[in-house]
Amino acid sequence: MKKQNKRTDILDIGTELISTNGFNATGIDSVLKKAGVPKGSFYYYFGSKEDFGFAIIDKFAEEYDLKLTSYFGDTSVSPLQRMRNYMEHTIEHLAENKCKRGCLIGNLGQELADQNERFRARLESIFHSWQNVFSSCLKDAQEQGEIAQGIDCDVMAEFILSGWEGAILRAKVMQSPHSLRIFIDTLFSSILVR
Amino acid sequence: MKKQNKRTDILDIGTELISTNGFNATGIDSVLKKAGVPKGSFYYYFGSKEDFGFAIIDKFAEEYDLKLTSYFGDTSVSPLQRMRNYMEHTIEHLAENKCKRGCLIGNLGQELADQNERFRARLESIFHSWQNVFSSCLKDAQEQGEIAQGIDCDVMAEFILSGWEGAILRAKVMQSPHSLRIFIDTLFSSILVR
Image (cartoon, rainbow over all chains, first blue to last red; front, side, top):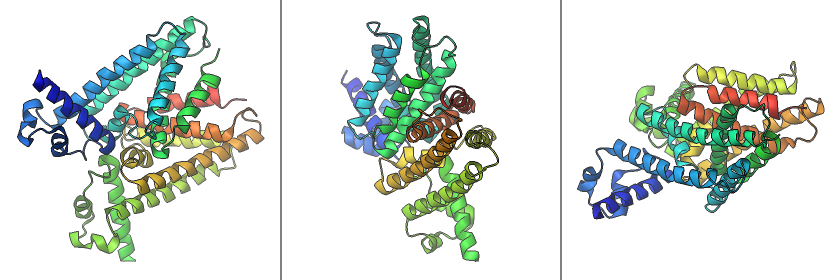
């Protein structure tokens, strides 16, 4: 049990450092030092730095899925309101820290897609799963008459996901949630309409 | 003159390596080796790796401005068609190489915004200048009755820029221009309308 906790500590600290500095620029040594783990024991927990990266991605994706489920599975509000609640929460969360860090999956996709095919494929599969969450929500919204019947929900979900990731990127560079606010307002006032 | 050419060579090779591997993971040595320049002479051309990074960004931004001017200054077509031509050209250009590399400014923004305030501010100023190009084009489109009078062109330009950057990011991770196609089609069929 203690070993499991230590592994989790290493992953949490790794996530923090990689979110700020990127995967390549984050040294295993600095992670272990911050976690208070002796250098030599890294390979007790992970087979390689790449395995460590995958463990970080998997943990993040699992936790993010819980977050998505809590918003998109909230049947006490309408489908469109679920999406809006998720986005409003994300803006608040990002704005708390001047939009630093951005999205871990977007960051790693930007950094690693060209460098490592296994990372690229895993990151793309996560994007695709998020897109499916959006698409399913849009289909529910369509069934309930919240959005026009003519909208192709799969296409729109892909549009929303890339627009959302782009707004997170711009927010990080601008150090302001302004582009995220514009994204949400434009989406719900001009695009996702009846 | 020869020295200027060598400096340009170093910048071009640096741009290529940084586009693929990121700024932190690109060693000065590998750039110089590829450029056929002795190690010691780097500081003849650049004060530091940071200065080198700024020179790459500035050169990219200057060249990109020429590209933008060639599309957005083309008064032989309507304002909206100028924007569409620019985007269609960019899709073609990115698709030629399976959308690898993405956008240098987006890549560096993602990587460096949290790490280096000078880089962040410079990258944000470039995003802002691109946004102004979009905004000016939208205002012309509005004057000519191509888009609704109710559209706030500054807001819409920010929405378009972040959406576009996000679609480039997704294209890189997907290794497909699919999200860029969806972005253009959705933009011109559902958003930039009368």
